[in-house]
Image 1 (tube, helix red, strand yellow):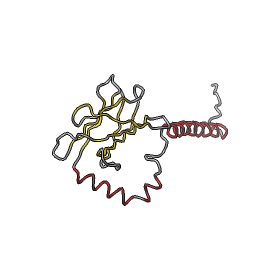
Image 2 (spheres, helix red, strand yellow):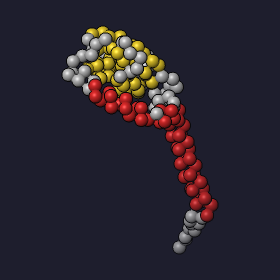
Image 3 (cartoon, rainbow, N blue to C red):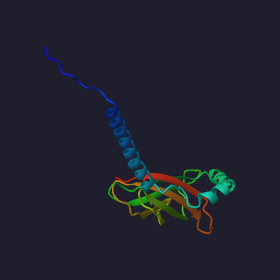
Image 4 (cartoon, rainbow, N blue to C red):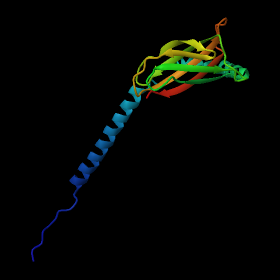
Length: 163
């Protein structure tokens, strides 16, 4: 009766298995880390440190905004058009007219955000063309102020996904 001798698992095999496992784990983590850091700049707002110091003023601004009762609907005109539309409604759900509306638009993966002035197309409806590629994630921050004032009385944010 002939038998074949097998050497089985030896220490060198275990070493190479563990080394390979950790090499794959490190490579995958490096890819995820690079992807995360290159797609998001890391700051929601400019001067976040100063905003943190000025937190009480921001809380008061939000209270004043809530007291107004205004709301905004932010979206795209249609799938093929890159026109940002903001509908401003008052506390009584009536369109708000005569506002100066500005949108800060940040396309995911790009370093800089762009600021766009929206024009009033119909009562309470403000629109502007934005430059965004197809199938992109776009962060928008909309602010509205009365035309005779310098300070924004309403701010809203919305994430849009370009078709």
